[in-house]
Structure formats: C-alpha cells, structure tokens
Image 1 (cartoon, rainbow, N blue to C red):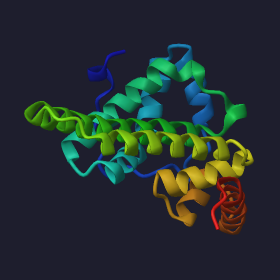
Image 2: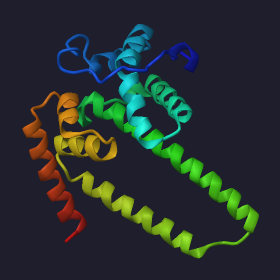
Image 3: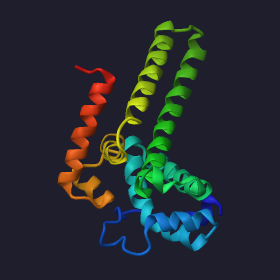
Image 4: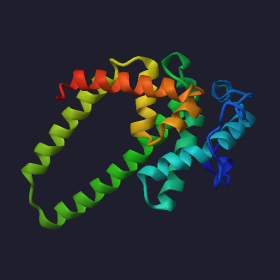
Length: 200
C-alpha cells in the first residue's frame, strides 16, 4: 500500500456518529488493517479522512500542507495499525492523536527550518532561545506525566477537546457518550491536571 493507492477526496466528510458507525466499528477496521486487509483500509480511509483533515487544518493553516499531513497520517495508520491497543483508548482517540502529533510536528519542522536559516544567516547563538526551548521541553514533560495520571476517559475527553480542538458535543459524538458525561469527565480531569501541575 502506497500513499497514492490510498489517495481519495476527503472534502466534506465528517466524523462517524453512533448511527453511522454501527458496522463495521473503527476498532475492527484497524484490526483488519493490521492484518494487511486493503479493503478494510479503504473503508477506514473513507470513514476517517474527513475528520483527520479537519484536525490537521486546525493546526496547519496552509490547505496544501494539511492535505499532505492528512496523507501522512493515513499512511502511518496503515503502517502502524498493529500497534493500536484498544485497552489504551478508543480508535478515534488513537487516530486523532496521530493526526494532531503529525500536524504539530509539521509546524515545529517549519519553524525549526526557518530558525536554522535565520541563524545561519546571522551566525549568532541566542542563549535565551536555548533556555526557552529547555523550559518548554520540561513543561511538556510535566504535562505528559500529569495527563498519565488521569483516567482513560478523562484523558480522551481532555485530549480531543484541548489538543484536537473539538467541542463538548463533538467529543460526545466521537466517544458515543452523553454530553453531560463528557463535561463531568472534562471538569474532573482538568481539576486533577491543575492539582498535579500545582497551578493556583
């Protein structure tokens, strides 16, 4: 399976809701893809490319780059489907995490490239930038550790809302939960994060 084999038009596709996701389940499609089932991959692609593209576009403003990253995400799903573990979270959260991570990586890569070019032109080391980079890395590690202290459902709700930019209602649809449950889990998760991070 190559990127070209999987390329299709994703414009206008939306996340599958509980009504449209009855058969087959996303988890089942990923399991079949892990075994090399190309038809399952096509079905997975059709089901997820629209909301993967939506997630990526929330991070990347350039439509061409968003399309490229969407293709990279779906290719990564083809290659790494065997690493999906339903015990660690839902299939939707797994796919959205890959999409968000890839989009953020593209932003960082672009910034890094621009910074390298600028530094090469000036040939001066900005020690403030190094200090900020180290501090940001330490902060990310603290947040990652604190996210690990949340329950699976809290982590999924917070991740979809804050890292992927979904509303309460969209998170509820993606996870097939009542909006009230999502709000409660989100509130509890944010309180635990606040306490873990020591935020006043």
